Image 1 (tube, rainbow over the protein chains, first blue to last red):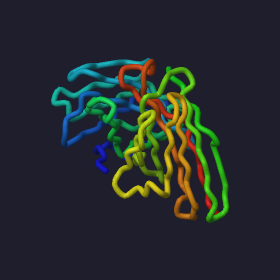
Image 2: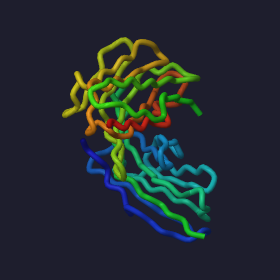
Image 3: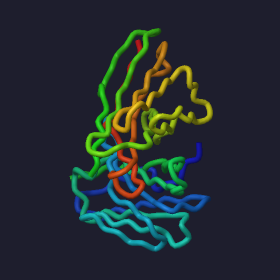
Image 4: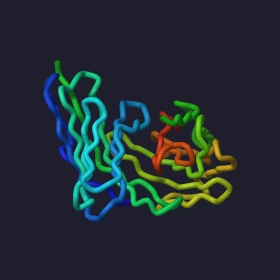
Length: 113
Length: 117
């Protein structure tokens, strides 16, 4: 199935640094979601975006819904060791009960002390 | 947030046997449930979508007779891997969406790691 392009694929950063990752699509979505997955666990929702141009924060996390509705980015400020994991973007068209998520390829984040 | 419980978290079985995985929405009614499969270092791949009381809709390439899905109630869906073989070993994750879970948001279970010997 279709996957969204997510970059970078992986990041190695030092504790305290800011992180930025983005997600692009060839088609538009009406909802963008960002999830984090820890090893051996299911994805956990971080931020949901519903309007083009929307900028939403959740603690140290900030995400934006691109104006074209074909992209989104996620920023993490002042990273800490527990930020380690895989971050997935997901787009949804919201076409009723048949709507489903299209996932990005994931960004693997490693934080060093 | 809404809670989705998945059981078991880990299962080992012999080749040729069947395995059932349960997915429950604990604090909301799941009108739609989804089953995903994830290989190491890869993204989630949707296997099938099920609406309560209806037959599941399978993604292209997913064998419906191999992966039986039942969504008999608004809080429970099951995935049965029939006649499992080593190539079925993977991480299976369920997701639920419905009334009370937020505006069209999918919440995920913790996943089930299946190892077929």
